[in-house]
Image 1 (cartoon, one colour):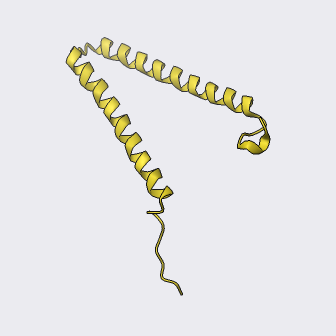
Image 2 (cartoon, rainbow, N blue to C red; image 1 turned 45 degrees about the horizontal axis):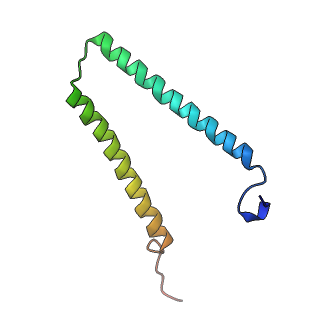
Image 3 (cartoon, rainbow, N blue to C red; image 1 turned 180 degrees about the vertical axis):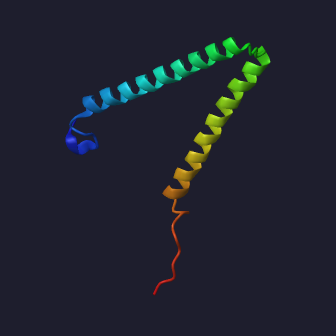
Length: 89
């Protein structure tokens, strides 16, 4: 790939770093989830299947809402709706 084509000359290094960060984040999420479930089990907390479903749907819809709001933010900035209108002096 050419350096002037919008890609850095060190593209494989960027990809490796991104994969490393994503892997570390996934491991952290799995570890925290496992520790939380273990702690709940030790405390005797019982969650019904409908409770787990509500928990999962709440997480999914929260992520969808955040993605939609970010999309609207970027579209608003791209189309110039966020520009300040100042009278010509």
